[in-house]
Amino acid sequence: MRSAGKPGRQRWECGPEEEKLGTAAQSRVSSGIRTAVLVSADVAFRERLRRALSELRWQVRETAGGAETLASLEASPAEAVVLDSWLPDLEIREFVTEFRKMHPEVDLVMADASEADGREARGPRRNEVLLALRRAQATDDAIWKRAPARIEAGADSERAVSYGAAAAHQAGWNSTAGRTRIQGGEAEPAGDAAPIVAGLPEFVGSHPAMLEVSRRIRLVAPRATAVLIEGPTGSGKEMVARAVHRLSPRATRRMVALNCAAIPEGLLEAELFGHTRGAFTGAVENRTGRIEAAHGGTLFLDEIGEMPLGLQAKLLRFLETGELQRVGNNESIHVDVRIVAATHRPLAKLVAEGTFRADLYYRLAVFLIRTPGLAGRNEDVVTLAGYFLERMGRNQPAKQLTEAALELLVEHRWPGNVRELEHVLERAWILAEDRPRIDAGEIEFDEAG
Image (cartoon, rainbow, N blue to C red; front, side):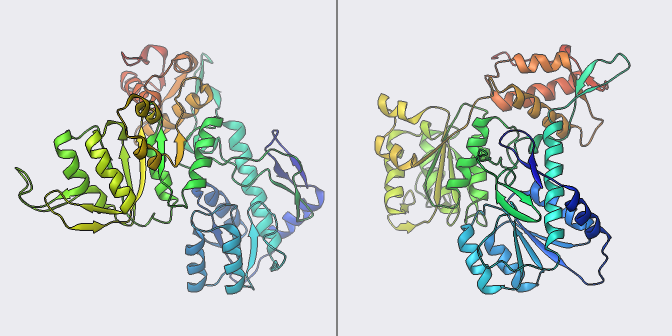
């Protein structure tokens, strides 16, 4: 087995002996039932590996985290577990230790083909699992080479672009490849290859700035740390917040969102902390506030920079004590929430201007994630355009972009970022009427752009 592919991105390439092994594995037909559990937070990776294992006549169960996997194995046994290099709820070493105690007979295969520890149980069909991993990685390499794809369309050979959401989602995916190479079924270090950063399924695009966003989400999600997301309007700050919540131990509880700029100042306190009946005019009944509604889960405060100074002091007190008082009630209520805040205005600058409390800023900005604007990310513009067109075409005939239309998109500055791109493409789709291709004449940018 040898490593091949783009620099920093290794893939498994079968040599003559392994081709024979693969052929033999495919030709063996067993009457016994064999089951593999795929453990990964990456849905797309599980899907590719599930298909590869199913072709080798394995039954497959899928789990997203370590705790779910242990529960699954308790409920129903399996012959093999394929474990990704990162879990949203448990450290890998912690999971492996517990797994070995509970299921020492189950074959544990790391998705990067490395050794989990020195006590590997090796099932008789381990090589079939390794073969499935190679096939799944080969599929990923093929997607990497295709996206973005420009194809000839029409009798006049005018070039157009059209590719699926799978390619768009996976253009930056490589959560396990590139860290090892396999020789004779065993794993060896991949040398000095640069580490690969995995993109999350929510995010389309492979620009380094977006991959860094995914990396930071993975690092902070399992913890209770407060997160501050800064980035221009339309750059996906709420999507980042939802990814943090999805990958956190609080994912089974609610994520409650509140846009601090969308609610009048006089009502914002009651909306945040709740109120009792008669607390103010129009308060005809008791109401639970957003903080209390998020108990056990995540509270997402969007546009936190717009919060009035007086209310900032009350929010700071809650963050310090974990207790709140509903408007019109002196009784304190203890609430356990994780705070994720977002702003399109740099809070450090607002602190310097005196419009945002410094002590609240330091409480919120324990871990900072910056979402990049779309300007200058030409490859991501192409990938995102393909993703949006594919999504629009799910319930109606598909459309393609001509190269002239694509060049307009790439050259645009995108002051409204990803949200603006989506709106421009939706408008172009409508203007193209029943034509299968969207040309430059249908591309109309927002007046602000």
